[in-house]
Length: 211
Image 1 (cartoon, helix red, strand yellow):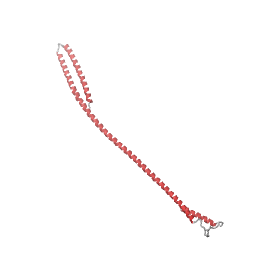
Image 2: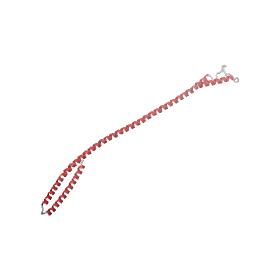
Image 3: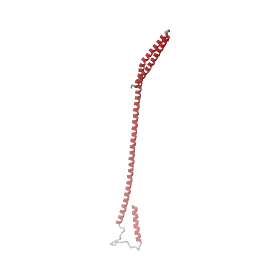
Image 4: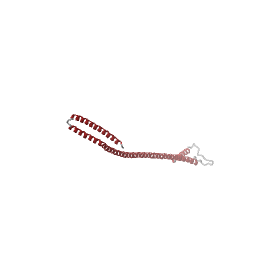
């Protein structure tokens, strides 16, 4: 601002000096009473100075306004970045919390399932052991009379064979009779064995079907 005003004043002084050095030009102007007229007058210089000051003020105001706008944009950009970072951090925190919660639920379910499996296995083992023991006792009780009958039949067979061996005169007849008796006893014994086997199988399946 000061430089512009100085340059303007220097220009005016140069023109005045040039006019004063030229003899062909008329002399300085005078007013009605003969006083020299100053050109430019003080009011003109004041107006020029005011205009220059106004331009300087406008440029300064514009520069200040631009700086304020730039600062506002920078502050707004910084605030947006901070808010976006906070939003992303909040989303990540929610995701991490959800993953941790899912892991906790999965661990709890796994522990509960393992406990249930262990209890079920122990209960099943106890039931199988009880069923096997009861089946063994029932089978032994069912086979005991059958085995006793088979032993009695064998004893009777041996006694009959001993009696037939002592009869010499009726050897052929006794031999035939003893043979038929032995065959009958053997067949009966085989039948009893088959019956005992069927009974044992039936008892075993009936005991195994009980809870």
